[in-house]
Image (cartoon, rainbow, N blue to C red):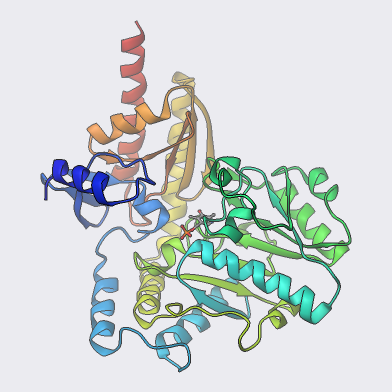
Length: 401
Ligand SMILES: *Cc1c(COP(=O)(O)O)cnc(C)c1O
C-alpha cells in the first residue's frame, strides 16, 4: 500500500475521528520510524508517550515472542504469572499496595473513579461522591473519564455527561478550597497536564492538595497515564513532589507498545473493590504484562531514568539559551522527557517543518510544540530538535521579510 491508497482507504472505510499527518508509517527501529517510501523520521512523539523504549526493542520483542508461544490470553477467573510478577514490581516502585489491570488510560481512570465512589458508598457510607477535577485536564474519552476532563471541546455533543465532577483551576489552591463540600470524595489531577500543553503542578500546589486531603479526609487521584513510568526521570512524577496519591493511574508507556493500563491504590480506599466490583476481560493479559516486565527490566538495566533526566535537562537548557536570541520561544515547560515549548509562531507550521526535515513532533493548540521522545535518545538526537527549531524560526523570519 502507498500513501495515496492509504488516504483513500482511510477516508472511505474508517471513521474520520483523527486529523492524520499524511505519512504512511510502515516500520520502526529504535528512535526512528520509516514511511512507505523508506524515508526515515526521528520520532520525538513516540506514539504519544507509548514507545518509551523506541521501536522494536529487542528485549521486549523477544520476551513477547516467548510468551506468545506459551500463552496469549487467559481469563481473570484463573491465575497467571506475568500479571502477578508485574503487580509485585509496579506496586513496589510506586509505593502502592494494590493494582487493578485494564487496557487503556481512560479505563484506568474509570477504575479510579469507581474505586473511590464505591469506597465512599459501600465502606464509609458517608454520602461523598464528588470529585474535584481541573480545567484543561485530560483523562480520556470514555463517558466517565470524559466527564472528569476539563476541556469542553472533547465533550461537545455527548451530553448528558456523568454528574459528580467539579472543576477548579490548576495550580490555584484557593479555587480547590472553594469547591470542597460535605459531598467531596476526592481530588483528581495530572501532576503534569499533558494534553493541555505540558503544565506541571507547582510544588506549593501539590503541598496544598496534600494538606486539603488530610484536613478533609479526601483521596488524591493522580492520573499518570502520560507523565508516569519514567517519563519525568522518576518512575512516577509524584515522586519528585514528595506527595503520594491514594490512587494512581497509568497506561501509555507501561506496555512498551502493547495496550495495557492499570490503577494502583494504597490505604483505606483499597477496600472499595471486592469480588465482582470491577472487571476487564483483556486486563492483566499475559502478553501485555510480559511486555511491561521487559520494559521495566530495560529501564533498570540500561539506567534509563538517569538518561531521561540528563537528556531532558539538556534540551531544556539548550532551549533556554536559544531564547536569548529567539524571543519566539515564549516558555519552556516540563520535566524529564515531557517537554512543551510555547512559541510565538504557528505550532502546526513548525510541526510540518520538522516533518519535512525528517523529525516527528506534536503541535498542541496554536502555539505549543510538545515532545515525548523515547528514553533512549542521545545528545545528537536532542540537539537535532533544538537546531531544527532554530532553523524553523530562521525560515519564518526570512519569509516575514
Ligand atoms: C492519553 C491520556 C489518557 C487516555 O488514555 P487512553 O489510553 O487514550 O484511553 C488519560 N489521561 C492522560 C493524562 C492521558 O495523557
